[in-house]
Image (tube, rainbow, N blue to C red):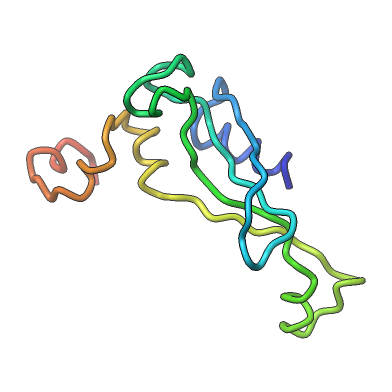
Length: 117
């Protein structure tokens, strides 16, 4: 799972980005992780975008809990899997260098018109 997520993040966000996996809790996966990437604005040094931490949370992930597989009719002794979810707003911030997520929700045509459809 971690290798797949590293490849995914580096392809979407950039090869030079650093990843950090933090243990977390999600009700349908065990173990669960939150994945952070180094801040694209400051390069991990700390700024207002990353709240002086150098990291931005981009996705949650984990190994599918055996009880979830059982409830779906699969034998957890035979099958396993992992799940992850990505905040699309954060990916757009990385791709276009948007410094504040609130710009995406302001519905300001001047801001939105700078992007190709």
